[in-house]
Length: 359
Image 1: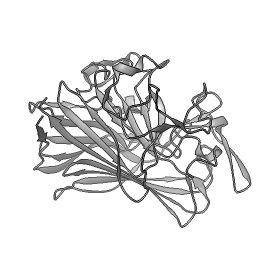
Image 2: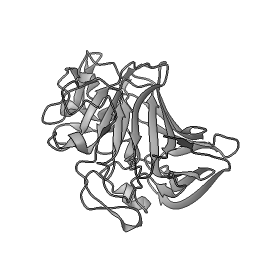
Image 3: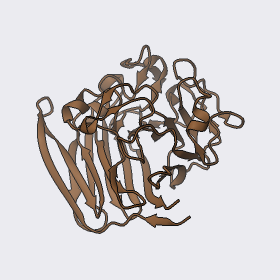
């Protein structure tokens, strides 16, 4: 098999402001980073990836991220298409936790639990465009958000930034947070739904996936971790070797929606978390991160969602690879801590490499 590298040459950033969010008095717009025939569009509503266009093995361009045509649709979205989620991504059981002797009751937005930061998490606010750079080989844009003490029940003021950059290998995402006055949990995640065949190409079941995680954090019926760490050996979660999603997904009640404990995780270095390959288009995505976990989700509950160009998304229309700290870590002392103290920094890094295979 031969590998065709994705080539980039020309760099430009274009901005269209087409909405104004009166509560924040910040403009909401679409921002484009472009390098050659690789194009990334984002919005400061939720620091969200709107589209990512790249060539297949024949050079044909396609958008490989599920999403909408209108900012208003993102404002009404319940799927978290492309969003930055937080202050704490994934679930917190009972929407509560105790820290330094103080019990905090959070905003429950999924039954009795909190999901992705609550009713108005980071995916549902306007971020400030802190800076952008449209020259050189690595164009980038940085969004920032100041989360206030008590927002959705979380303690302390928190300053957050998310930087998206086009690099030689593909795209990098860097999420940083700084606790300003109180210790607080922080676990940010990028919630793009990927379909390497193209966002409107159907389901992702024929995609081949490899996940470099030999353990998972099992969950109860409410998808809250039990606190155990279990081996994937002998289960449908064993994706240590390249495997088509269709070959194992039917062995699960609804599909994949589980946190993988990544092998050889290192907070100071990027480690390979997953590889996805769409054979028809030849597109390959390799994901690297410095986080200990990754949620693999196969879009199990997407139904009749009208997306870009009027295309209607159904279940398994895209897959999510959300690198993260372990879900509900605030209630499981045996999980890696996600507590950030004043003076300490949180940094979540991702690198997504894109290429193609001829066969």
